[in-house]
Length: 133
Image: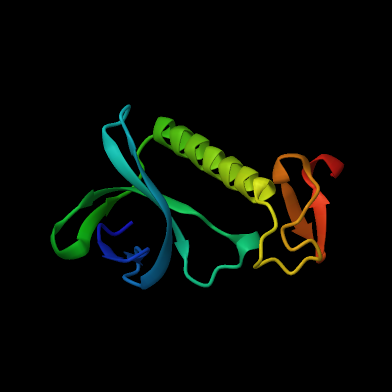
């Protein structure tokens, strides 16, 4: 892994071992107190969601929006990163399930669901209460 990070909003340019620049979308960043490092999780722009290859690296922010990426060095770090990623995915799945239909939704209810706590999802242009799933 080349040690170069060029941040541009939520994107970075990753330089691989062959010197190819790969534009990537930043999934999220986090800091680990255990390892005293910052980490970035990212994937190549244009990746299909079902085939998303998430990459990870530790990083040090630099001047002018540029920073330095460093390869993850230990199995313990990878285990920690995998746990953080799994929690991130679970949190995002839960957020999607708990969203109620709103005016932007194209389903018939237009946010006027009869679900308890107004927790519903829109599937196939139809409102489905979370309890009915």
